[in-house]
Image (cartoon, rainbow, N blue to C red):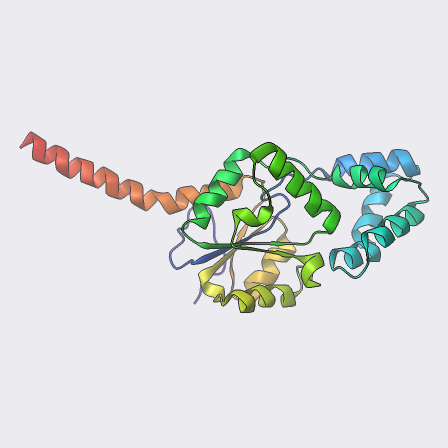
Length: 238
């Protein structure tokens, strides 16, 4: 049968395309920073806030492009009975986002040179502006788009993970075969949904776990190099 789950000790034979999630794969996420700020502003406990944010229909509507930034800010503030300027809101909302390390940028560009690579993310226009601003300021990379062949953002395509339609959309748009495609994501529900469609998956439990994929790819080349050196060394001895 087709292997649908990749572990760190497996190789990548047959993989032609890699689809990356964004949060906790390419960029660190700091959920607690946003919750801390909102707790101070609203007086609502961190636990209650966590539940509200995860279940809020307005977040899903914003992440699928069904409501504008202006409507999202207004309805979000109404939901928590808080008042923030647009700039103040965006600073709070973007406190969720952490860093993108140089090592991850380097790995992505290396993988792009050998595979068809894509980004597939549940996100929104406020966060995307912030990602791109950080990339330009810290790494001199103008857009996330430069790291891969194409990006698929939920708010632009009108679909979200873990719904099957968004995976089928990227496979169809790019002409990818599931068993030749590796999907990397930090959430188990997203991984399971992709695997159910026959896509090979890597569950990224810690943000930099996926960097080991490059080492998995490289081990065979290392063996060949060592074998060549041994053969040549023996020739020299003889």
